[in-house]
Length: 52
Ligand SMILES: [Zn+2]
Image: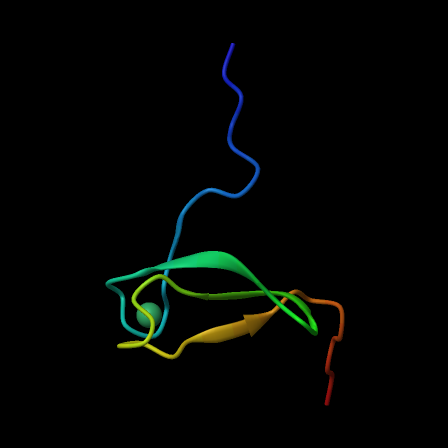
């Protein structure tokens, strides 16, 4: 029986060296690169979707 983790490690699309990890700020959860502060990749939690 295989149970995959809730959030498998996702390679950072910006530096391709760190991993996208969940973080928490006073504004809510977001994702940032594990290589921070060398890499400043950030991504929102998906609460706000922008479409053009
Ligand atoms: Zn990165």
